[in-house]
Length: 93
Image (cartoon, rainbow, N blue to C red; front, side, top):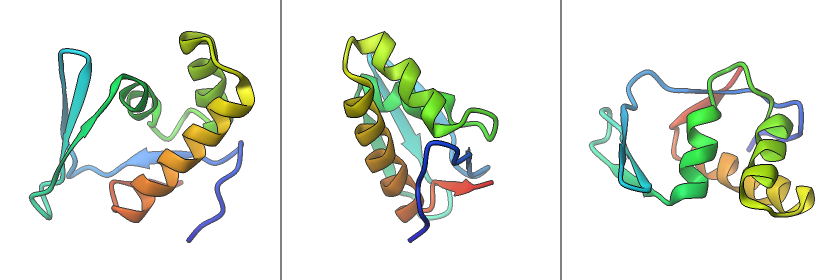
């Protein structure tokens, strides 16, 4: 598994459309047919993964938006990023 750091850039795979459904966000992997339902915070992170926002920047925005510590936001963002990479929904740029 790749090392995830504050300066890591991730980009969503092209075959992974998503849609906001209320407060949740649903992702569909067209290659595997798997779908994922993300809670509000995970959806917040997902929407900012675009190959331009560093993970550290996304975590800082998460901390501000949800009133949590930067350390907690970094931990949550990194853990979620690892899951996205594992499930081949994003790639490191």
